[in-house]
Length: 454
Ligand SMILES: Cc1ncc(COP(=O)(O)O)c(C=O)c1O
Image 1: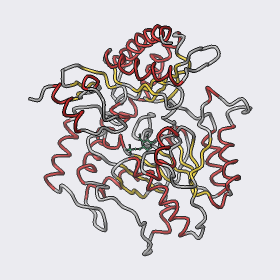
Image 2: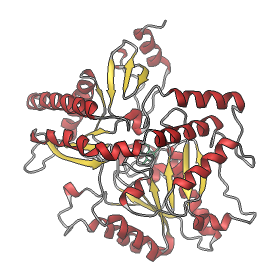
Image 3: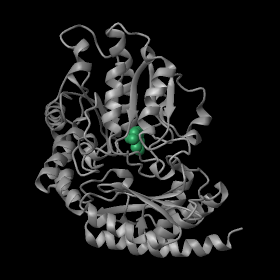
């Protein structure tokens, strides 16, 4: 058996982690080896509560033999075949099932290997759709500040996080940004939170409606810390999109498949998109898969003609991934995972709201099994930490301390400093209590640490 130290050494030498520095010290490397339910174990046998479901992904939890069996059976029957001009049963059944589950007329399913590819596909489809409809100038897209939509060049252009974009400029032109729905920090010039939707209309008018193809929005925006839209936001956005002939893309790479307590996030928030982009929870992470769900209207120029959507990925709709997704959707039904989220979200929320007495906790926000806790220097004035302080608070202190105390979650400063929680959808009171206790202890220590830091 390879020891933990050997594994960490090998990883440090050869494994180029995602969004990770190559020079990470051997001491700092956690090697996660197995999982069961809401918990994972590292190679030294330490147990952690997975408060982030891997990366917003392991909806059904770890160790589900049904999903492993589905993968094995499919690999034995047909390990691989592309869905370029061919089909295979698993992709067909999954497409039909997703069309059945999706709201409204989202009846066409275009598979990808993951979330960035789904977003990339949606922008390209929107462009080709408008060319086919005789509106070739509609190429631009609108998305929100701080939002994360992936890392391929198109998806990165839609992403609103300057910190991950600068190195790769120039990016794809025509990706316009509007404010994130940060109701905790409403800009001083905004009369009320209807401002956020109106900014989308203003951007469309400024750019010229005839040039805008689509608006890309997450139901609840992850980056920045679970920004829940104000009441009426999506109703108004839908209205604006319809007025100017712009497509509404709901980027549900995180919010689909139960994260907000419904199969799709748009259902929870009461709007009908033209396209849904999804990935992550579709297979509960047991195999990689993304899916773009497309309305009949957008598919229409491609139906019953020779017009092809000129786009595809070898591994899109991989048979093993599709078989796993079908088994995962069976689990959603059998165990009523969405019902579990809806029944327990108030208790989860209460466990986090309970932390609000801590002076460092500025705001708790989110819904379903998806919450952010914004950390502030001064609760009364909402004064935030400087970049240097935030770096120390999150990277040098909190991330490590939370893990030492047995909780894996995200301590992030892509906007203001936040702790994010997004556990497997099977989590219950025991897990909420653990999160509460661990975060309370870590934040209490963090406040003392920040007193010392200067
Ligand atoms: C909203 C959203 N869109 C797109 C992506 C990119 O997905 P992937 O990492 O599977 O490429 C993510 C990833 O977290 C996401 O949160």
